Image (cartoon, rainbow, N blue to C red; front, side, top):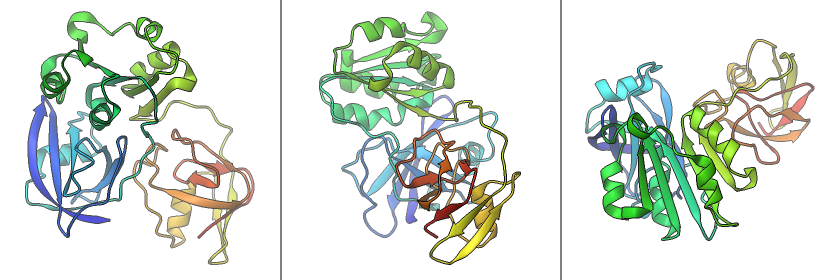
Amino acid sequence: MQRTVLDRVEPVAEGTVSLVLRGAEGPLAPWEPGAHVDLALPNWLTRQYSLCGDPADLGGYRVAVRYDRLSRGGSEYIHLFLREGRTLDVSLPRNNFPLLPAPEYLFIAGGIGITPMLPMLAAAGPSARLVYVGRSAATMPFAAELKATYGDRVSLCFTAEHGRPDFAALAAGLGPRALVYCCGPASMLDAAEAAFPAQRLHLERFRPAAKDFAPDEPFEVHCVRSGRTVPVAAEESMLDALRHAGYPIQSGCREGVCGSCEITVVGGRPEHRDDIGAPPGRMYCCVSRASSRLEVDL
């Protein structure tokens, strides 16, 4: 973890604040557009937020947090109790939503889903366009900043007045090698999946997509470095079983969308249940399981 000091808390829209975190012990770790960090809060919760500042500024990170009326304690604490000057631990950046090379980009953001798009739009160049959807201008973080910086390359769509944009029409207007990046509520992502070719569409979800799996069964995890075998009961996660056995695995979302609980698999066949797409030889043990014995690098 990296030690930071909360330098500024600024409102950027109705119900949304920006946090600027300065390195307390020197420059912070580098990052690229699409990256996020785990923020360890003083109320013992850890939450994940996309970095939305300037990747060239390693003196500080910027994130934005929307107040959620159904908050599990993270956004509520930040909005009601967190104050400037507080020391906070922040993880090294991880990137499950990287900006890939392309001659043309279409970015689609809904509400707080604008956060990963800010550094992407800056890095993508003049061929990139942004369609930013929200209830009204007052509820859309950074809307005025984006229009002032990028002009007609940014289209603001107010659903209270115009409804949702026509994704099919947007798809029809794209060049053959364009990439589409979309972040926002689940209904928006579902509409994007229906409109854009899968091989050209990149999504980042706030919550995991609904999936069906076979009933959970018990299995064993053999930790090859320590030589221990840990049983995982049907009613518990692999993450919890390993942590109860004394392995200090980091965790964040516990929903398979942040990647903080990644471990290395050296034997067996995991059943991947995450929304990220675990790379070969890796798995996210908060949600993923196995139907037989696994061997992991612990």
